[in-house]
Length: 427
Image (cartoon, rainbow, N blue to C red; front, side, top):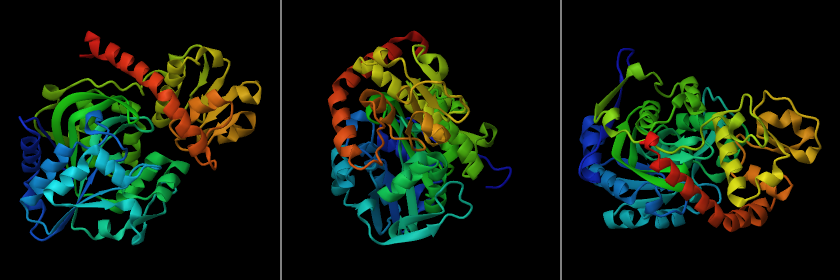
């Protein structure tokens, strides 16, 4: 991008999803100027979890359909809908449950499970910032003429929110997914971007997933489609649309350091609808004053990143929902590297994340950067370290506990969402 050229972010709010998608493409130069006849186009929606369209966890099938129909105008030879679902999830099942598989069949395009691919290229991530020095990427993605990134915007437990940048995490297989969590997920995500590098990003913000998404979302109608060639500028403006304070999200500092796009609003031009005209406050319970939010506990979170703070919020509120919050308030919970450790029995101190590893001999240490989304509350609940990397832990502890606890948690979240959206101050 030239020094004086601004990153363009397009926003459309038309009577139909198809009209909004078409307008965004037109505002960005038109689909036939981006894609030429006979080319291969990969569409990368979010289909990371087996959740239906009404949850707003996965890219809406109607948004996917609209993008497919828009791309068809350029007469490509192949349109391929590609995804690698979250660890432990079956990609093809996620395509089916999300409604995306039906759309692909109806529109005559291909579905592609990245997890099942054997033809992988071990790509060097030059100038890598995390532990991802090399990244195994399907040859099909590297050789395609175009990759269109097609995320849905949502709150996210391990990243505060998920949009254009995070969606490309779904281009790697489970082994790399797991590796990304071992050191620094945020920066590893940026490194994968350098390896895959989509050429345009179209955001589904018709219905966004607020609340404790992705596992317990509260859908909110925003009614817009957004797009940009710059994923960082796009995510920044998407946050502005729903009232997320980007200064509280480490995501953007990492993106700035990685040089993936602009975080300077003075260098961003919003075209089409303006932010003030489509603004809709979204409930993001992953942000707030963590040190004082649960006064019954000794919470120590100096230097904690936004990802671990988001997980702290999710897990502390889960304890409340299950009715086991008060009985465990003798615990000290340490998140972040700049904390002191009290003189307490080891089973009364929970250390959350890789940056607390130096204190591992003083408490129950949960590894990960960030750790698994439910590791903290399950460690409190069971009295033992719950980490998905421990053999058998996912099958024997994590999944059964989450399934048993979900009804109480769902009811709790729905009540909190009702209180938030009925409060006039949040309108």
